[in-house]
Amino acid sequence: MNFIAWIFRRIKNSQSDWVRGYRRLILEETFLSIVTTALVGVFCWFVPLGWISIHFIDQHATAELTLVVLALAVPLFYVYHWIRALHEVYLLEKKKFWEEFKR
Image 1 (cartoon, rainbow, N blue to C red):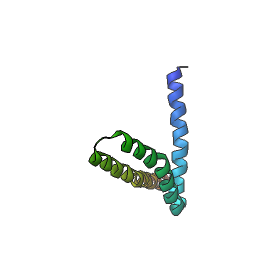
Image 2: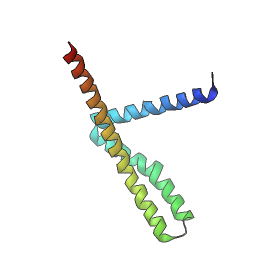
Image 3: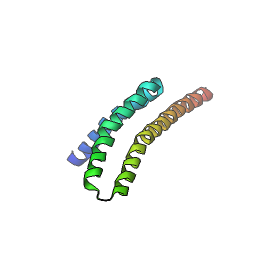
Image 4: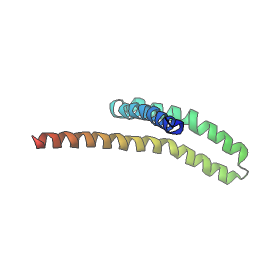
C-alpha cells in the first residue's frame, strides 16, 4: 500500500469525523455550538495568531487589519458550517423524496 495515499485517507477520515459531529451540534444545539465556536475560535485561532501578528508585524495598521480579519474568521467559520449542515439536510430530504416518488 502506498504510504502517502494511506496517510491522506487517514487524515481525511479523522477530519470528517469532527466535521460531522460539529455540524450535527450546529443543527441540534445552536447555542452550545455558538459558544463552542467562539471559545475554540478565540483560544485556538485568534489569541495565538493575534499574538504573532502583534509581535512580528511592524506596521500598526497592518497588525490591526490582521486582527480584524482574524476576528471575522471565527463567525465566518460558523456560518460556513451552518450552511453546509443545512445543505446536508436538504440533500437527505431530497433523496428521501425521490425514493418515495419512485415507489
